[in-house]
Image 1 (tube, rainbow, N blue to C red):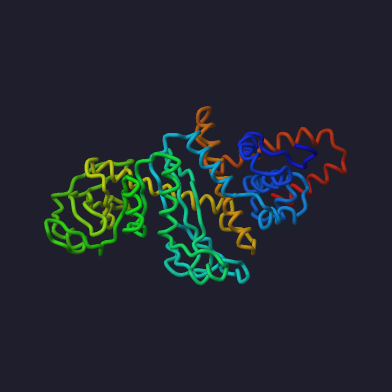
Image 2: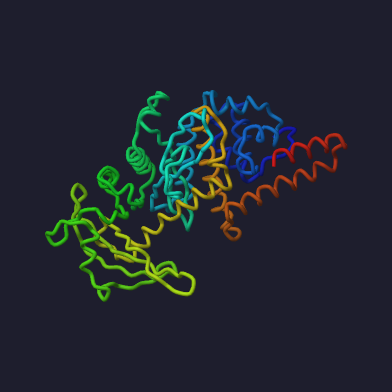
Length: 398
């Protein structure tokens, strides 16, 4: 890898080689510099990444993101095919969105006001629609897209797509590449567009609906919360799922433009201080009319894997820490964060065959250890001036 300040982690670099044919030689160097920087550095800036491995010019990495003519769709397609080749037993597609807050970004392209589910108010930033596949408690990311409001899309001369349009595209593309069985998502996406696409592709959905959604049961059409009032506590069934206690009541109903569904009114027992209380009632629907309710609840709970993905991608890989202004550069940077997350999950999957599963943070430490071990060997044969240069660059980068 040439005369470098810090060598790339060997195991991670081997995964990057999968994409080598999609780049020219200079592009691949920039690709490796940025992706390894995302993995190893606590900072998410191009200036920091430029000092870490080969001492590259800052403008070279910026141009790689904003101007260089590499095709991210080809790289993404190769990434997605690698996922299904290396982990073929992915059966549950998960979709959701997250907000990358940019409260002080006045010149960053694509930034607008979006509702934050976490803060329960509108915040400035990029709304990112994401998707992936559940795997052993984790999420393997599949695709992402920045949601642009219509006026923002027009300003950037980009096609306008709703979040539902984007999720439908993700589901359709995933279906072309992999024969998964279930799609799960929250009540935001439980509409005729997304569910209609799932039905068209002959897949099964498990999703929550809002309590004011109309559903017909026993020829009576009314809001689901009103149907729920007819149920006596004694009629609920109790079960244990993932070491948590649930109670539920199941029946079939009909929803206009969706069809016949299994409806499950469900609550989980929550421990609060010195007492236990039942959660609010969740109303889960599915077009799988034959599987048990316990199985459908367990399948729906796999949706929760996408929230740790959002959190860890932000905290560990800088999903919301970028400082680029150019929209194309932002898109490409977010894609590289997604790619890095995928490769770390693939690496974790291979390591699980040798040792215990690692968290994302532990994986990053594991890869840093590899770099530092090689560096310490090199330092022994360096002169004092070279050692000082290495120390200064490492301190600046990390």
